[in-house]
Length: 444
Picture 1 (tube, rainbow, N blue to C red):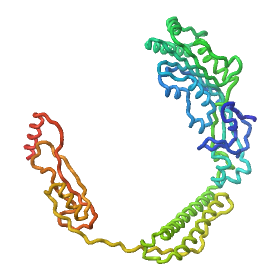
Picture 2 (cartoon, one colour; picture 1 turned 30 degrees about the vertical axis):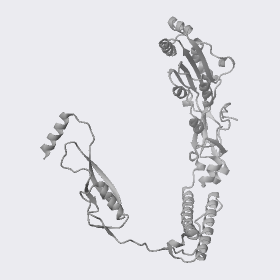
Picture 3 (cartoon, rainbow, N blue to C red; picture 1 turned 45 degrees about the vertical axis):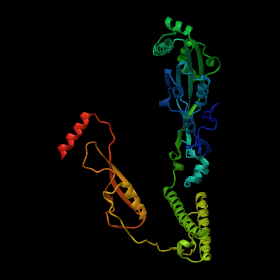
Picture 4 (cartoon, helix red, strand yellow; picture 1 turned 90 degrees about the vertical axis):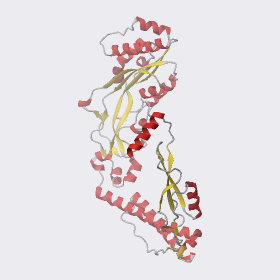
């Protein structure tokens, strides 16, 4: 397919011009006619990044490999499956120390500069729901190819300090070589000696290249040579990395008629309000018909209520069908409701019991006061506050105040709040107790 990148391990259907649902990453129909894909002359270079990192946890390894299922789904990343495979193959061990050398290359994006709209897409542009079902909400505007190279070194030494030292030495020597102009990488003798003493394993993941360019790296020298050569490999034999998505309103012919779209949205919102109102009446009818007659003064018979329920159920179904047709574009305008009966649900009057006098409970023991309130049909609410050691003026365990006030009237079942005091339970030295007493005297 001209101008599009196809991925051997990713989404082969995400070619240039393809519609995409940005929420799920699912490929959709094609709403645009691609123009000739090309590279922008002002953006024709590569983006290359190198890194050598010491990995000290499994989560660090996943992060360093760029493993993200959500990112792959939403943004069309093609390479996540390979790096995930490397992570699983590594079988991360806490006893080991890891050094990850990596090179990521992005070639210049190949993109569409002036795509046109298909006639079938133009017909649906003012119906957002149907348009999205057919073509998604974005399309592939650009594709980026390049390559990725990861070399994971696993190091295990009987001496953990030497193990970490070897990892740090390899990291430093790799970084030093990457930033230098040396023709050939040479590892220091002490690093070579530690390497020979260690259990040493190299795992590799590479996306891009052909034939000899993809051979397995066997030692640290081969790793650094591959790192150096990799931008050229990714330029000559790239793989698909990701796609860039654009919204359809960037295409003039697919920009919606806002007045028509607003009218559609208003009609759908009106349908939603009517459905809610009709459903509420049906729910009230159902409550009455299913044993709720005792709660109502009117109506008195079930036949009238059943007629209301049937009429409003029919109206609900009719407005729901109208909303579906609005969504499909087969009708337009507001739903015209049929003539409907006016339901009358009049509740029985509320019987309020005679008010009861709230007794005076101040200075009564809190347990006695609580029991007295329950006898009279009130709901006691206990509210405690603490007093510090040395406070001899505040009585403990008795009612200090109450709400409502003593001898006021309140209906049975109402709350009565009782405030009382308790001692602050702390251990204090004799000196602290003297300070507290002195402070209280000063206040008095």
